[in-house]
Length: 207
Ligand code: C5P
Image (cartoon, rainbow, N blue to C red; front, side, top):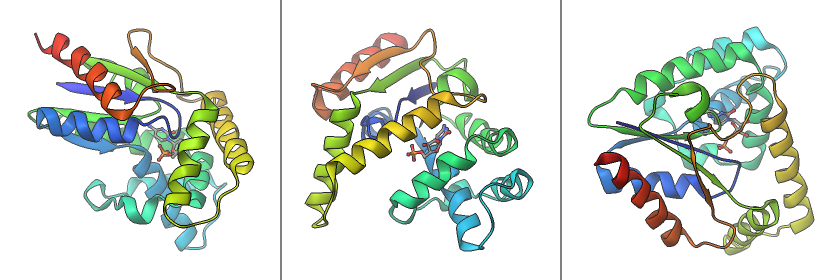
């Protein structure tokens, strides 16, 4: 059983995916971390982000067991990740590893941008989690401020709009809902309500 959860940055799909995986006892993979780990390895090695062969070589070496969210969540790493994510051979290497993960028993939850459309088109359940750019920027802003740091709302919003455009506009595996995905708009919904909505969809599919 595979549950595919896609959506733009900061829509709440990470939290939702973790809760769904916990609820059903499934393995969870945040596929964004695989793009982030590749980008970080390039940055750490002082290698360029615009050489596809070099980036694909790094992608092939990413260890799914060693993905550390606390290290990879940095904003600059997310930006770098979305730049190398436009490269087809980087995607091929990472998608191969993601598909192998997806086959784990008793089931898996994968979240990202292209899980329902490309990585696992046969997933039993597909969710597309979204929210307006303003709401997503507000959440990021509140998160940063809660961590005791300064944040500029206009800058965060501009980054989110730019990232959406890059993820939706690329030729290979652009961000878009699969035709059979269930849409969950969290603009006016808390995480608990989003979880209940998702759970009802998964329960119906399990019957
Ligand atoms: O979700 P997260 O912000 O960690 O993803 C970082 C970047 O990795 C995204 O902006 C996107 O460009 C890329 N990504 C992707 N396909 C996925 C997951 C992430 O292209 N399945």
